[in-house]
Amino acid sequence: MRQDERLDYLINYLIGENPANLSIDLPDEYEPKRALLRGLMNIRLPRPLASSYLEVQDDFLREELRKKGVVNQDAIKASSKDKRLALWQGDITRLAVDAIVNAANSQLLGCFIPNHGCIDNAIHSAAGLQLRQVCHDLMSAQNSPEPVGHAKITPAFNLPSRYVIHTVGPVFKAPLNEYQSALLSDCYRACLELAAQTQLRTIAFCCISTGEFCFPNQEAAEIAVSTVINFLNNTDSDIEKVIFNVFKPIDYEIYTDLLK
Image (tube, rainbow, N blue to C red; front, side):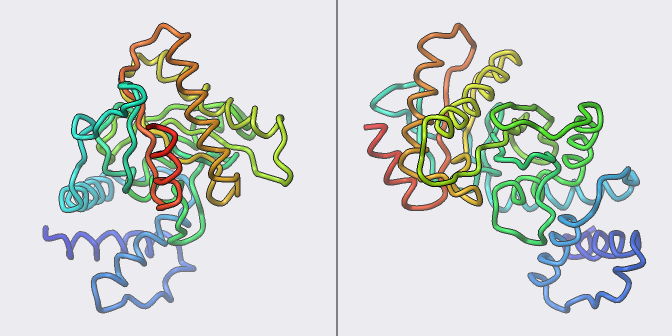
């Protein structure tokens, strides 16, 4: 099956699942069709999927990953400040590491806004619908929202990483205070503790809370670097490399300065 045929199959499957979607007109061009598929995936509530859908979806997403290109952690240069730290700017869904960190919401189900630009949406969209389902299973067992500063680990499915570690960061409210800073530090520490318990060697952090949750970029980066260094210096673990993954130029500049 060609990639365009897979795309049509996936769209038609998801439209057919829900009678409310039957009025959707399929675009003629590939890119609008691709945006439609992502939007349909984003709004789909967690429930079991047919194996035939999953087979086509996985082939489709893995072909997309092949075209984007996988970035191996060995290709990311270590920081001169600390050889255990590294900085990389780009799409976190391309990183072949033991775990990437997702800045999640308290429901831990991913972003339901079609084609939203948050990292939660990007990770779930690239991993496939299995990620929402396994998160749903975790949250059903927990039977309560995920607290800020905690972490959960799941398989990564169609991502090149082995796992996704999900953490809920604090929503920033000015002025910045010690409590909010401590909550953000808890996020990094909880992810590292979970990575250590799982005997992971590499982990890539996104800029937790700095996007939709509006935490100031400079202070967030300072908290991230200091928390990670303190953990590595004072905890016996298998963690060999921590990558700070940034997307925005402002975060790249801030982390570059901090990691000199």
